[in-house]
Structure formats: structure tokens, C-alpha cells
Length: 68
Image (tube, rainbow, N blue to C red; front, side):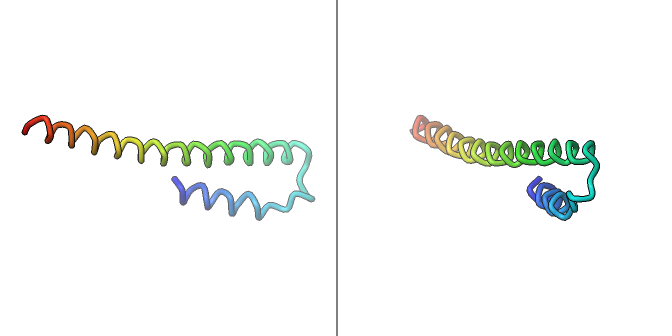
């Protein structure tokens, strides 16, 4: 997903906003807002993956320790 976000950022920032119609400017603003939301969701997803790994490690340790 990160590659897609980076490619989208590159595309959005190469748009010459001076030549856009009002409707196109609105659409670009919506696209930028959606992009920001996608970036934030990706950050949240990365943190959740880290938490998941920690919890799995704890669960595995508890299983090993409990079996002794």
C-alpha cells in the first residue's frame, strides 16, 4: 500500500492547480484529503501489526512457560 500512496502523492503534486476548473479544484482537494486519510490509516495499521506481534510473543511465551 505504501508504494501506491507514494505514487499517488507524486501524481497529485505534479498537477498544475492554476489551470484547473473549480470542479477540478474541489476534486483535487477531495483526493488530497482521502490521501491524508489513507496515510493515517497505514500508520495505524503498522502500529497494530506491531502490537499484534508483541501479543503473539507474549501468548507463545505464556504457552511455553505454562507447559513447564
